[in-house]
Amino acid sequence: MGLSQRFKLLIAVTALGLVAACASGGGSVVENDEHPFPESMFATLSSLAYPARSPEFSKSLTVYRVGVKGFQKPLPVWYWKRPGAKMSFVLLSGYGGSPESNIVPALAEHLWESGFSVLSLPSSTHEEFAQAASTKRLPGHIPRDLLELGAALDELRARLSQLEPELLSTRWALAGLSYGALQTVQEALAASPHSRFQFEAFVAFNPPVRLSYSMSRLDESFERGAPLHLRANGELDTELAEKIRAAEGRHLYWSEALAAFEQEELEFLLAWDFRKSLLKAIAWPQPDPRSLSFTNYIRRELLPSLSPPTDIAGWSRLQDLYTPGGAGTPQFYPRSLLVFHSLNDPLCTEEDLLWLKGRMGTQMQLYRQGGHLGYVWSDRFRADLRASLQPLLDSGQKE
Image 1: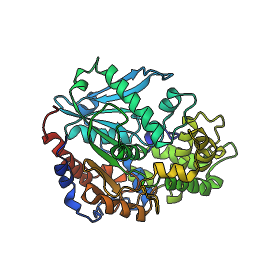
Image 2: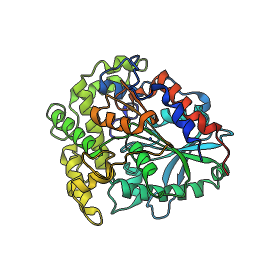
Image 3: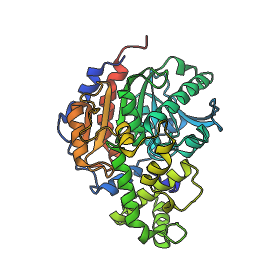
């Protein structure tokens, strides 16, 4: 992403047990009013407000660079090994995301502390994956992204198993955040898997219900803020850049750092960062983020590259979980799928989230507050996640 490291943003089990563990909220929205950032954008960026990671978790990390057949460059793979773990998670990052971005290690630590090993690699929309995978491929089309991601995961596992033999015997689950969460849900819904991994469970953190809406929302936020916050060369204006530098220098409390920003400024920064991530992923020759919107990228670049080409409605039907009036909308979701979300996520509408909650029932934990992944820091979420995942550890050994 475009923002610096400290400011980056930022998914054969006893399935009935997995669902029951998430049933504390029943069919209702969980009232997590303890969140100190009720506004959606402040909540979103509060996902950076984590306590120091445990020394044991930090020591568990090994970073590999693995060559994948057909890729132009080796892929970085982050592996947090949990000694004695019988089950591991593949953790997919968000749009333009990398395992080294703040939110991925934070979620990895939650999974690791719950008893799992964690394997993560750059998002299929991140420049290290998108540009290494193919000179012709354009990211952002779920079916094609999952095919390429699945093949990469199979080869990564085979190569890493020579260095980490336990990867051959562990049981597996798939998790993702944001765009990676949408990939996770779509993989759970797929008629046939895209890799040889036998995923026993799927956990998605803040999947966009309609990717088409999320992209248009980011475009709107960018267009509103660009005249106020961008200079002629497309870089941030001095005042906003100074605020970011000042925020990065505050090492004590992110709540104080965020207080320096207006809600509108934070919304623009989120859109600006996503836009710059897109330009890097597709190797767009113009660095000015005003040169290509998400909507124009989809219409002018991505859709003509598909085989056969399609229109925006056809693309949306394959990406979106909910298409108003769409016949292909699933009525029931696999019982091995678990979703965590927040009602004030700025990249989803409240109506869409309530629609998904109606389909998922107790398989979806929907928090009142939290923005886009901003609930992840909270004690309530950590307790919910640990309780929801315990049945995976308690279930039988891999046959």
